[in-house]
Image (tube, rainbow, N blue to C red):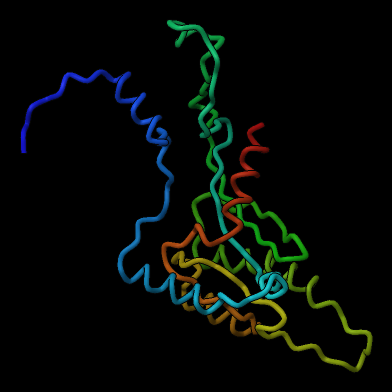
Length: 214
């Protein structure tokens, strides 16, 4: 193999790249997966591959997200003349003292939106998460389990009524939380690790943050 460097300009390389139908893009971000993660994700996909849209509407999707108050973390594009990079008209302002991180939790299902809960400062442990479930998840479940027309009928929830999705955050997997959900007969979807991209709520967070900072 020759180590000779060919005298090719960047312009020529870009032109040849375009002729080959190739473009230059920002790399997509995806979770880093170990072999066991891949296997679990495939197992999850195979389990639900035949579900219909009506089946998926029964899932209660949930997630937490952090929001920085006072700063928009998204890139801001500007159109400016050359050499004007630091002109105040084209600079994105940041205010360090105004940056406050807030954690929020939300859930939704096919037909209904659950509440958006602003969490207490200091992160979310099992005790805080139990309060979130009680105030947030159970209020949505109450809406889903509307009283039957016959007052003598008792409605029992199972996986055919709804299925609660939560990821594998430590506070979600704490034994007291699993016992708490079991006590209230909440069926839980078994979630593969390193799979935020499978949760449609992640897409809503993107839209929510854009609207929030706007």
